Length: 243
Image 1: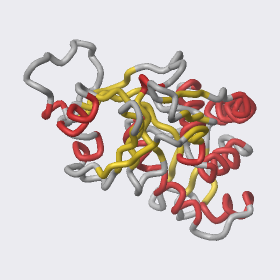
Image 2: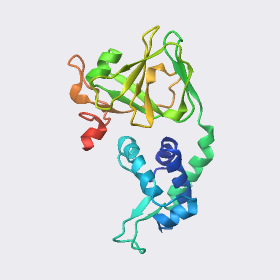
Image 3: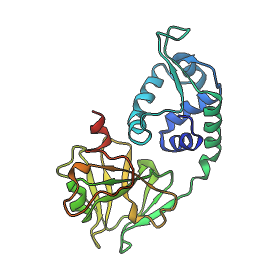
Image 4: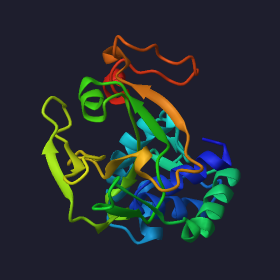
């Protein structure tokens, strides 16, 4: 990953521990170090880096095409004979800029049609994915257009009307949130992930977000044509298509 804007987006979307690792790597650019040396510099226990990198794999694959804002030497080619990790100068500079600007992420708000459910997102939002699966089409009346936020960043300001229903046919064990007063579809909440999907149309202001791909196009309805927008298309989800 070399593009500064993409690195900033990765920095915004990843976990707090992953950001801490990015900051630690940015402090010593162009210096390949084995995992234990980096962990000592950050003040981490042994094997935490491996755990953090495993945890960010889903985000890398789904939103960044597997790209990462850091570099590896495996044990076969490293001078230490161990796994080594580092950033080049440009990657480190992009991380430092993202770190400095991180506190300026604006709070977004949204809610249902009648106002019985209101929420705030106090952190970055993922760009929008279009899902064509049968469940989403039944739930929304057409395809779903969803962004996503980290769980800790999604704050329910008014939840008196919020109701939940299990999503029966999905493989993520998710539940779906809606307003019991007006029926607005709001959330898709998979318990094993660190993000909650939010119906993009429920945001008060979605400026800056863009559609970045289509999921479950194999389930697309027979009454419409897929748009010729040159965006990535996945027969199922990006995770399942990668196996």
